[in-house]
Length: 132
Image 1 (cartoon, one colour):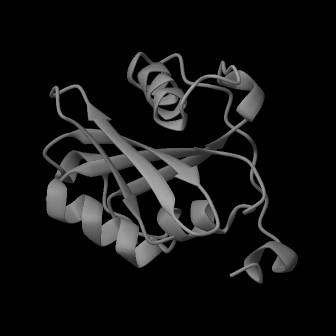
Image 2 (cartoon, rainbow, N blue to C red):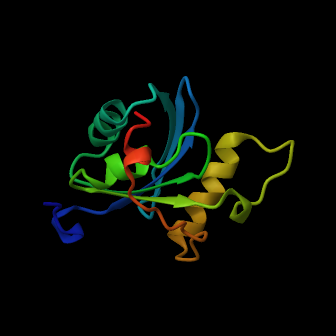
């Protein structure tokens, strides 16, 4: 069973740019901390990295819908202290010259300002669960 958000010091906002070979992660918070890093594309590595950087924090994660499906969403939402949403890429302003980290930062700033991008409805299915 997931812990309530009130059991944590504060909320940190995590934007994840999902790629096949690595995930680019941008970490922001109301507390003024910002960190960007890359990690191996698996949930245990991501969770360990985040919890090492900010122990006892609640992590509100977001990533753009894409080729990877919704496994990351489902896996993170099973872990205490994590909530993950999948957002529509069209809701994040981009241009060909924009860098990935800047796009992630804009997505996170919308979450921080409570004007979050439209969250996609994610349905559980056997097909989705077998994408691991």
